[in-house]
Image (cartoon, rainbow, N blue to C red; front, side):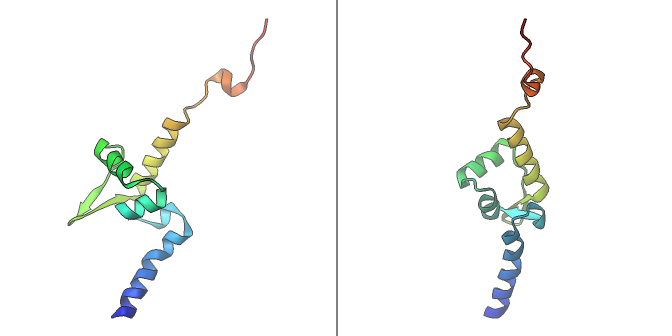
Length: 95
């Protein structure tokens, strides 16, 4: 029995070591926290605010890989707003 549990654990841990978001179809809250390096409180605040979508199966809550990627994209957009045309071209017109 211990060998079966150990084998299942290794199978589950395999994709996480690769570091690719798309190797997961869904994250549990602890997996999400570990993968995205956010705190537990911050993760639950994001869920409560509606910025991070989750779903439940039984008692366990999951975050789909798509929802996690969308959350990350929105967070990056909020943190790094697009530059204005003049800032992007860096062409200050002088008279």
